[in-house]
Length: 119
Image 1 (cartoon, helix red, strand yellow):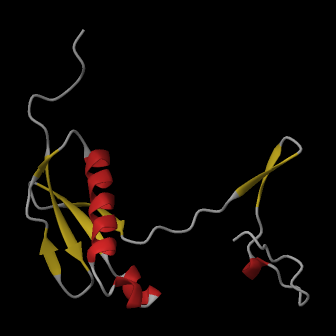
Image 2 (image 1 turned 180 degrees about the horizontal axis):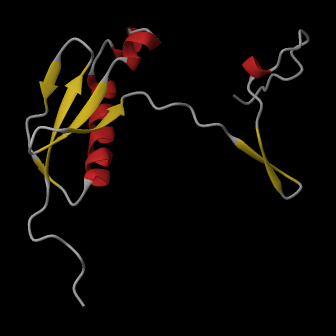
């Protein structure tokens, strides 16, 4: 039995965008689906953050402006992939159940009892 793979893969273009300029990634990508394009877009963003010498000097607000746009052959925007991923909350297993770890900013006490030393 043959897999349901289209004879011709969809083509995607990537654009680096920072709310001021939009630069096209030099290659058009033939990929099986938009999920594969999203994975490539995230890798492009990761490489960009590593090779741009001033990246760490940008403020969080400036860094958050950078995205990779995924566009189909017709020029329609399909997905926007942010350069900075949101921090995932760490989960703690406690006596067979999972609870979300409290972040320091969630603790409204003045004694700092809710602050975690691990994060």
